[in-house]
Image (tube, rainbow, N blue to C red; front, top):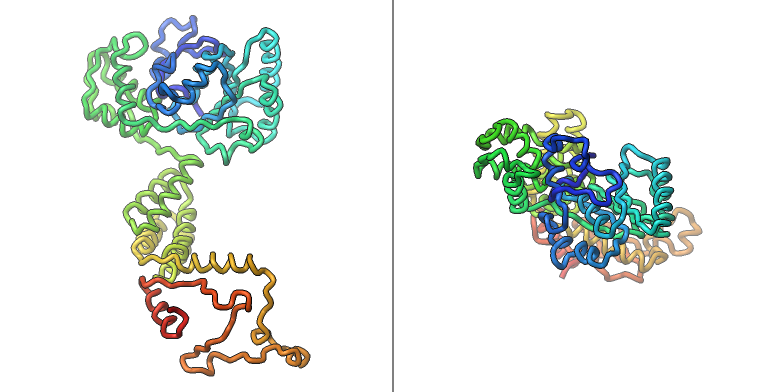
Length: 450
């Protein structure tokens, strides 16, 4: 994945082991450098957004003031400033900033970095190792870093778009602190765009562009919190209209083309959670929206269908037993039809489960029964419920006192079927919604409910 530094900020390289392109004296025209790179912040004061981290009382601001930077994992979506933050932290403590790509480099390169870090330490200089896409390191590579992080030879700053708890080894995670960077807000993106339009040194100020409010909004909305994407769209639009041109919404749409939605492991879990909660809350439109977001992001529709089946039994339950049947049939229909025809039974199942009356009483009953089973894991089966398959068992009293339900009116018999230890406990308490209201009425008539 590309360098994640661009979002909030403008550039500068003091202390960098590998200076960014904008600082290269061989480049005569800095306009060859992407706008997002040129506008990289040179200090914490230039950062837009991330107030909880870089505000006056933010953690990063306090760490900078203390001059001591612990090893960190920077977690956030693309374009939120993870790489830039790493560079600024290195500069704040006078450390060498050493970038490492988890995608294209491996342990041999890490050995070189550690050797150079030893030399710097002898010269009383620190090393900040910045690993982009740290979740791409395998277990062996992550384990390789442990002794160097523990000894303080390096300060590790890893950047990841994936949830660290899922993708970073527990041993390494325990030696770092996780900082979460949020997508930029709309006002943050507007400020960044306007700063770029006004800055004649690093931005587009010398082009004297006129950006309509509608065009600005289009960029802000489509960037979805990603500052790099916002600046790239603005830069492409500027090239389309030329100096003194007017950037309108059509130009922006041409510059953006079709934006692919962000979809990684973390986003997938969040969207799936939103999808299930929409089903549970009887919000069919919302459930359809989250489902289409996930499918557009490349998710396997069977993931959604399995969640619908789970919701049908967990959240609808006996309020509408048909919901489980509809959900399972939709899954089978998709497996036979495939896409795109299979999306129709998917949509039908979503709307059925979302619209059905809801009850989680079966779920709660199961949880209560499980708790009782944990309290009394060895409670004996009452003798009258034991099968007397031999004469010896009958002599022992197996089956004595058992009453066959079908010999009684309505095929119901008041029979103790729980062990003595939990006799009288009730696990299932039906609701008065949907079909479960019929179940509740029947249980009351039998005296099973008060």
